[in-house]
Length: 212
Length: 199
Image 1: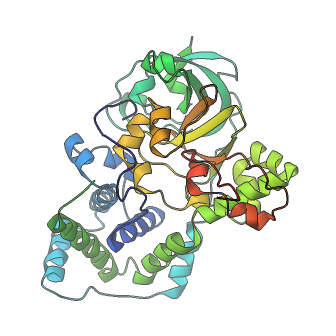
Image 2: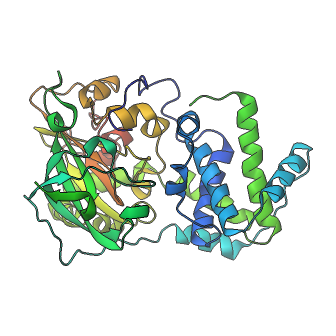
Image 3: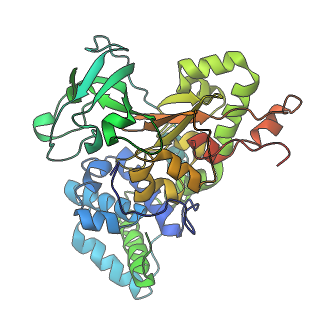
């Protein structure tokens, strides 16, 4: 949504809170378990972007996580919508949620969040720092990590970040490829501004770029 | 986003139902969720990032390691994991101010800053800080000199960013712990500066 208008002020009453209702953090935690345990199918991030746009903008942040976590579980067949609906009604009627404790599993769950998988170095990157590149014009059908506001713009490669799995689907689907830090002048993205110039840097996959 | 209470109640019910189904099926234990929530509520937060910044202020070798491989240098202090796999640390200087956003979702370096505040996830911040950074920074009370170069970092890949704010003046005699206390969360995102010791 970079560059869009009409969302109003950033700093508002309550905008500094990290999490509000307890269910929000529980959904966050549940989502990490679903990913690590392979209980769901698909990327939560990609699925969230499949929300109908008006619903996406109207939903709270963890509401989107709830939505995507449920869909991942349904896609894998781990749970059915009927099973979830049934528990919604049982809880609404005042029934206690089932509780099960497994301290070893709890310790392992926390330890798993500390694992890190850094990007592997890119051995044969197509571009090098200092290269002038242009972001391809494109209209990917699903998830992408190429924001609309840089498509078609020219920028300069600042660094090669490493190799990562190309996240787009459909015609842009692909294997590991190099990711570059590319710097853009604000004027090339948004035109003249009363603020004077600034730079915006993005990390962009090689397929998004062509020589300029 | 604001919601009516009925809608919030429905979300809470649905979240609890999802957890209940998985617990009932034996695919999840309740204390796994409790433990992760506790971890993110109590252990991960901007105090971690503040320790990284304070170390960078007092130790030039550490600062160089932070610049070369952010995640590895941060791991030296015991922090790492999800959303901190690959870290790039950007440094403010008298002429350069860095600010971080994720316009596509709300990517944020959890191991050093915890979970993001509401404004970081808001459509307003995600839409505006790339397109009118000075106006957004002004909302945070941050008025930068006209000649300061502003660099906005949009976290569009798996790389996460941490800003090292400028070390405030008259802090030569402070300990590393005292310095860390001056490092605010917003100063490590770039919507603020480190606090002054007399403030």
